[in-house]
Image 1: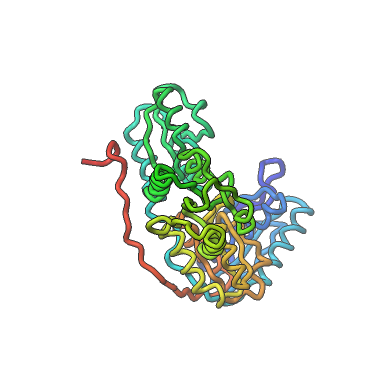
Image 2 (image 1 turned 90 degrees about the vertical axis):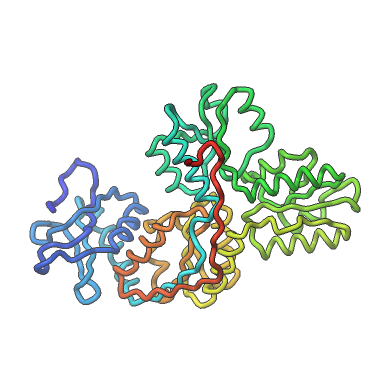
Length: 403
């Protein structure tokens, strides 16, 4: 609880609680928002208790009738100016709020299974466990598994021969499977069963003589894996692409989709495909997975009533990005955040009703952290808006099941 010392690292100490103002410490739940704002201005920070009786060059306030506070100690004049500006931004955003929680949100069954696959592999392996690509598209999940010993690699050539390697939830192409076999790798497959379903359909449609059109985003790992299942598969990313796609026999065309697309945009593309190819054949059931659909429907139920929508998820998470786009199509400003520190206080000014959700690869605790931080800026009322209840569970690969 002492002031910062020059040359020792952080140049701003953000108060996790304020001492010296009352018989008991004043908590600072919004400290992470202040910390994030300072980091955006390239200010190295640390969170710790602050005793206002001892600290010089400190700025502190109490909020919500003195039950919560904010505080910061700056090491130099420039940092002090940045800190005061950051504090002002948070004070401008201080107000009672309602948070509309879209449900379902956060982890889906496929993500839970993939994470459990790596956890169980780490428990059972006597050597390193390698994971090809990110197991799921979330920086927090990957960092947590790395801290437990998982080694993430971009390609199999980084994996020593005969080692254990996990294939990510997004699936891989037959060529990748072949490369793993040739190097005698011990493969554990964490591919989501719903992605596997699309791979099976691709092979079946091609075997009956159809040209297979895949609706999806170029470069996404799921798309790359699916494209590898069939020679000459066509990729369509937009309605405009439909007009230029070439097939040898317009009467023998089938389509599949990436599992994490926007339901609305995919419907538009399928409609365009059907106009161009009236004999177009579709998969027996939707390829867009239940979790993607459910999260979009849940957010749709709250977005129009919100002043602001926050979507928790990483920038390479397709289903999370689709949620941001959905809110924006409803006319509501929306932002994708990896965690609470990514929230810009300026977004919160005049936003008294906030819609909050998380993509299917984002851990649930990140939502709780955001609600706790917002409560540091004023009283919070939370409203759960549930549009579906998910009970699906996927079993682990047989080598990892506990007996």
